[in-house]
Every structure is written in C-alpha cells, then in structure tokens.
Amino acid sequence: MSRTVTSLSNPTVKAVRALHLRKDRDETGLFLAEGLKHVTEGVELGHAPKILMHGPEAADHPLLKKAAQATRAAGGEVIEVNHDILAKVSKRDNPQAVVGVFPQVYRPLAEIDPKASDCFVALHRVRDPGNLGTIVRTADAAGCGGVILVGECCDPYSVEAVRATMGSIFAVPLSRATEAEFAAWRPSWPGSVVGTLLTATHSHATADYRKPALILMGNEQQGLTPEMAALPDLNVKIPMRGRADSLNLSVATGIMIYAATS
Image (cartoon, rainbow, N blue to C red; front, side, top):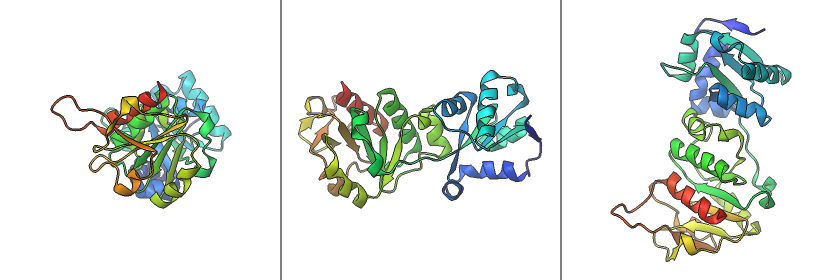
C-alpha cells in the first residue's frame, strides 16, 4: 500500500520540489524523473527510485506496480498524491501522473572501459541543459559508451536536461572531470580523439575515426578553447553550405557521433 499525502507543506513534498534547484541536487545526490515511461526505464536498467510519487489514476497500472515493488525492495518510499502536489513538484499545469526521485550516478574516468563501444563523447563547458539532454539521448541511440563532462558544465540531472534525454539518462554512463583531470587521462585513450574546430582544415566526413573514437566538443558560444583543442589527434569541421555559420551543439554532436560510428 502507498502512503497518501495531500498537503503541499509535507516535508517529503517540499524536499522533492527542492530538487529543481541545483544546490539541493548537489547536496542530496538525487534528481527528478517525470512520467511512468521514464521511471520504468530507470527501473528496468537497475535504478530503483528513492521516492516514487503517483496520482490515484496511475495506482493500478502494471508498470507502476513494478516500479513500486522495486522502490520498496531498495528501501524507498511509495507515496500517492493529488494533482495539486504533482503540479507543484513538476512545476507544470498538466503534470505527469508519476514522478520518481533517483540517485545520481557518475562513473570515474578510471572506470571507463574503451572496449565497451566504438564511440564516446566528451563535452567541454556545455551550458544548455536542453542541448546536454539531447546529446545524451543521441549517444544512447547511437550506442555510445558514455558521455564525459569536462570543466564547468550545466547539470545533466536538472529537470530540463533529464526531460530532454527522454529516459536515456538511465542508459548512458556519465563521467565528469576538471580540464586538468581530463588532460591527464587523455593519453591513456587507445583510439582516436577527434575534436571540432571552425578553423580546422579537415572535414568531419573524411576523418580517421580509429575505434574507439572519442568525440570532443566545445561549448555553444566559444567552441573548444586553445588548451582543449590541443588534446585531440585531429580537429575537424562540419562544412556550412548555406548562410548559417554554425550548427546547434546537439545537432553538431549528433553528426559527429554518426560519422564516427558509420
């Protein structure tokens, strides 16, 4: 049986709402995943919720029952709430009927297995959570082995980023490192490291993506810094054939991923 909560001032409700703030996510190591599909994706991949909130209309759904069982088995809590609480927790007028609170997971650089995939992605100082979430989703679709966040990046576990992953936040291993840590680790990479640079002379289509390829992308405004641009074996550019002089970061990263895995 689920515990029923109807008050917006309930401490658990307040704690879940607070996970919209990065400070609270950093302090607790938790994040929000909205929707039965996303919660089910997490459970199927071995991520049990710490807190599982649901509206009464979802109580009898078989997938919710499975998620509730996994939550309780891991020592978590299942709570039935009303529409007003779901709206406050998700900050949406038309909220999902199910919300899960999950532990954040980061894989240390030393534990990355280059043999796990033909392609990995490293992002330097990515700023936009929508871009980051879309890149994680694309990396999942292409079978990449993981995404490495280098330097001061936006939070992959923000509500906006998690929404953009469409559930892939549970499927793609994430790592994070400072610029110095990444630079020290990079020589151990057994395949090619390929970066993107507007001033590069090689086309992305003709680069030698020696497996496993590590794609290094810069941020939305500046691209790769000179220090980061010195780390790849080769820097390439994606040709612009129209009036636009650049691509959205998530689009450019998707092109690079599929070039490296084709």
